Length: 387
Image 1 (cartoon, rainbow, N blue to C red):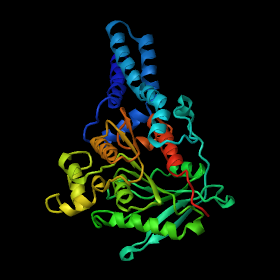
Image 2: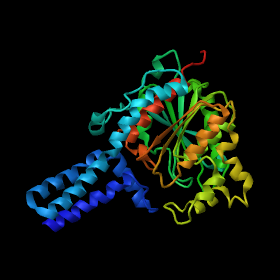
Image 3: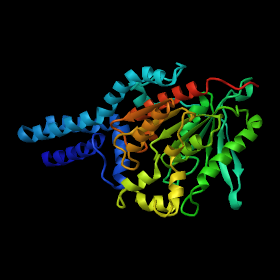
Image 4: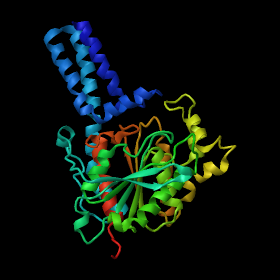
């Protein structure tokens, strides 16, 4: 029994280390890091239970070894919760400093929500074809606020661009967030775009611009404010959202939310490893048609950093410090460039989190993302257009 308990105690101890160190470059360990970081408040029950068994069934050195492993695992599984609480204490003041207005937003962090979750009412969702490039239908899912048809003031629209490494993913990705934002009063359009390797840059940029144009044209029918858009992208989608947001010079784009995305494609290629979890160099070559030496114009055009200037839209950056798929150095470089240009921005860095930390919207990272994104949307879309 004591040997089995020791082996069982090793498992959570090893997994809990993913809240303090980067996961190895294997796909399954990255997903395990999401589990450890965003569900650790549930996983902590395992070492606690094993520790209790050790107290009942073992003695001496065996008991001590098992208890040390269990105590270490429990502490590391709870690290994201305590880190989130510390960050939550300063977030309201920092967001107010970055974006000025102090509008209503959900509670910054609630321990009870970790276990009880947040209630998200369902809203009406309709699917529309917004473009047909080369005969391929591109669709968006439109989430209408429940009160949109009953108000004289049209709501702003959040345009969501999915991740997936440019060669996968679709508009239904993490759609629970879309329902949540729509229930709070924003129109939400989750769009799709042409994927690599069959389609290369600038096809995704063209598709995102086509979606924006379609939404503006149909703003009356959809009952949204065509002068208030915010672009939100995750991972590969963040790269697209950043470029479109900064390069379009469109005053209707009120803000950009960039979740763990690359902002400099030549830099992304330079620091990538052929043997990393998603074979990044091969993926980037398929997306941009070759290496930076062969396709310098495409790499330049696909890099948000080159487009940032004093008139760029306000930006919210979210990135986990332990991200194994997209280096957090991208977020730091993006924040520095925005600061140099005098663009209002905020960089939420999560010390325990990895790529995709918002998979659990009620986990430690999910709750902080919920607050900052909601707070950001309130601020940058506060002034409606005249009807």
